[in-house]
Image (cartoon, rainbow, N blue to C red; front, top):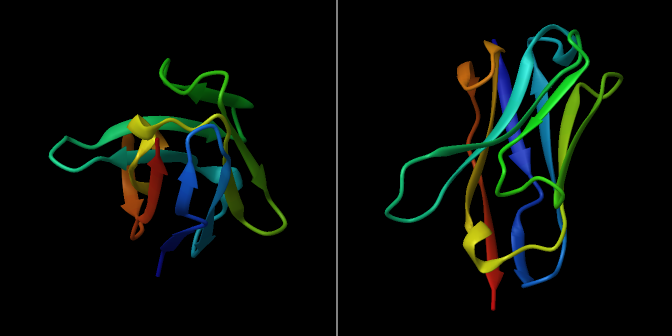
Length: 118
């Protein structure tokens, strides 16, 4: 049974930081592409960042590049998203997913709310 659990969301003022965690069970982070997506109220879900340990690759959407950093801890089977210099437009529910290709995830977990106030 594959489970992904996102945590670490909260409320922060613009310019602040948060670190999201995606704790995974049932599969290994070493074998999958793990990605973060987000969905703001009234908007479609959009990809944010992804990591492939096997390919030694990370990917960032332009609107977070330079502000967000994705990383992983194989021993904890966890992927992190360090979010710095947050903006009000980063407000959304953030989800982590796992699959064999970026933006084509087979597994999703419940999201965590991130709210950035101006």
